[in-house]
Length: 538
Image (tube, rainbow, N blue to C red; front, side, top):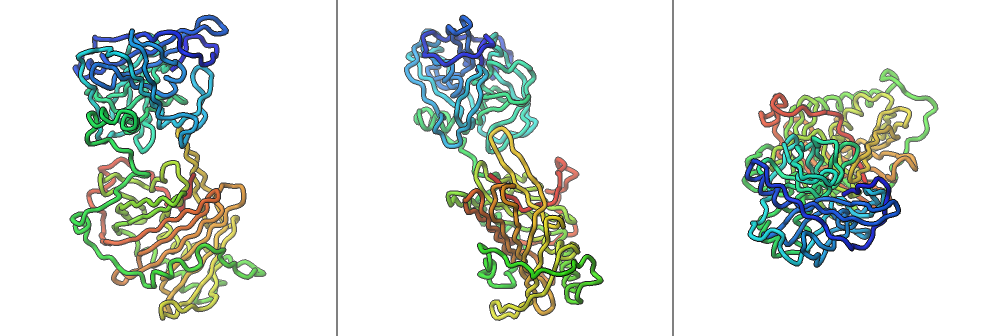
């Protein structure tokens, strides 16, 4: 939505009718059908600088066109009274200042509105059909693919209707991000976004820094489900549904689980020992007068422990396993995600079970405070083995489940740059990542032969750096043949006063000298394989 006069203007009560404009000359049948249903919304108003024109776009949602869909911010600023001779009976909005997730956004007219961009939807009920005899529009509820060609149907600058070519840049659980083949985006708010067959996939809502964003179809369907349940059932008998908090399979069939096969080892220590010490500050080592900086000065058993850790790390290459991840985010909401992880050499790749999507890191839940494990189960043995700035000492023994274990304690300072944290702040239009070194400490529990059975860690984040007050984790290992592999992992964190937790279970291990063809990266889009780090986010 925008206005013709560049000067800002306030929002006035509706006293002028909107104008309906149709374009009938598109060639493809599907595109022609949607073109019939796209409506120019405009209103003249008297402002400080004379008569000003505000405009946007809407589209017909039902047969005959007595219900229009547009953006919340368009309906709010244009303020409908009449459209094409039909009176506006009612305007239902899916968002507003009190909506969960509402943020303050500047409109193209220079004003400010508070709403949730994911719910930027309004339904306008008319007194009579604008297009009697026309059928309902078509919708596409399947998967969208980055790079897919789309079309935006609207009225750039409030002029003639155009079918603007677009390309999908990213698809996730929020807004659709597009590139537009036009520099004139004003007036396109509320435009129907379709695939090449003319099926609606979303609605254009904003253009920010050269990127266009569209409200996803599931959000439009949610508004129809709330305000027009009968029409919703007619248009969307099988979806779309609001996506889960993050992508991936939340359930797994017995058949698929059996097909994964592989070995599922038990942890070498009782499961209760996983939580030992979590939730309390880890103890520090007694200050040492001098710093040990090379292996020649370390005790013999510390050197043996490092060699054991090195072998353990090396044996974790070329593995495939099923990881079941359970998250408890703020508000105590529990989310479950099952996916496969592959270790190719020492590169880590995640694969969603349902659609085979490959990822180099797990996505954080949408707009929730949460902690997420990375690859600490692999990186902690590597750290013990090769980080010689890590101060490592044996501090005693511990009886766990009838086993007498040796306990080693370690710690490093920020300046040592041994331990790192990753914190992501996610908003609707942007996300900001921070990757920074932190002080850390923890324990390593071994058997008499110095096999590493449990490793824990606490990251110490400086006050004020990020709103994370606590980040702790622990990993239990089990025997896969003669090698130790992760079986259970717990992550605990406090973010902005909210307690968050994540638990991971590893099963269905298969060792291979080479990854399955399904994850052969020569046939896939290249992945940016960075070290998987412990992650927290807002």
